[in-house]
Length: 482
Image (cartoon, rainbow, N blue to C red; front, side, top):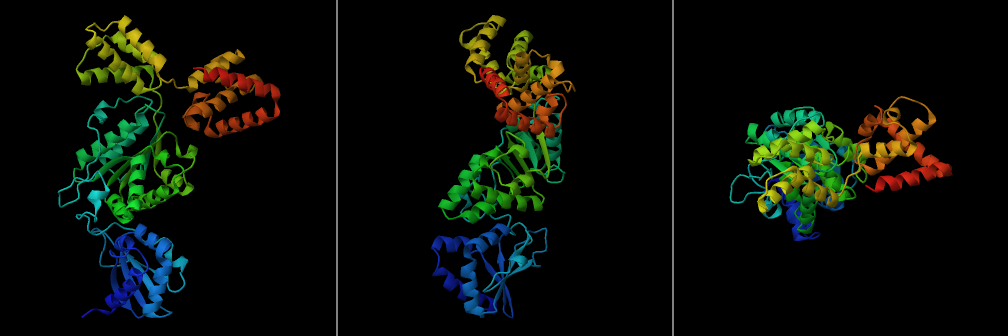
């Protein structure tokens, strides 16, 4: 015999089914389970916080209508988020929706937890997610990690010491350190992707049972779009709820995508509150990201933001030596030093030049000499897109004003020195992806507030001082011709 709460919910579903599509019904109402009926309060069990919020946003009017029909004008609805096995699943965590009016206060910050059946894959997840390995009873996710991108191959230097150390700590104790989330940021080609792969590999080495997944922000966005198109957003959310260590590369690519940011915001909260590790990369620190919602940026600042800087000469040489050692080839030290001295700002380009030299030597059956290396590097550097650096900008500004570099970096308050320093900061902000802190450090150990003030001062002078505006225009032309 059907129990009272099941009978009430069956009556509600009859009305709901007539008012929405079959796909929407299967996605958002079929997974709901009635738990109890206490007087005029019906308690429903839903799989997640995101699931509840979707119901509230899209179907609250329909739910109020059905509850009113079944239980009368004083009918109320309680939700219980499903708890995982580590929690007390038999103790629901209710919050109340009143019909016909919604009590917003009662809904604020409801409890969040993971789904109960972690060993069972969500319905349709194989068709939804390309990272799932099919044919297994227990959900098995391919981590998408590159084996060669490990810590052994990630050379440590002053440029990356903090980020590398934090990465090792996270890899050995994911979700348990204060580095959650861990945000790694830098310009292109300085090792962000290598480092986060290394962290993922470290986790798998120490905790083989943990589910690790590396995705780019673009992949995440495309998956979410597909889930909307196929009416299975619920499967999308459930899949990501099961990840123990989520690595998202190029998070800044979510800029201007509010719906994707919204779903990532809720997933971030759920994973973080359940002790899961989140690792993200970006071309810039959170304070400089545009197009990202403030509530999401605030989450990025919860843990540690660590930057990867341009490696010094010694570190560049060590990277090249490690590369040829791994590839089992030999190359004269003077050639490595030539590469390291010619290509300074992008490790990826430096390794590309090394590969080009090896290829020229192999295909033409020639020994690797300084002459051969120089010809390859000259062509490579000439054809490769050049990156404007802070050092280059400082040199250009000092040359323009006939000012020694060390004087510009000094604490001098002379007008011409201050002006040159402010212009160097201004152009560094425009033409490089360096953080304000890095720019300030390079310009005489100034803080980020000084850099912001300098940029604002330059902008004001451009608008009010014709002579200064001429300086800026001429310097801009010099800097852009790299």
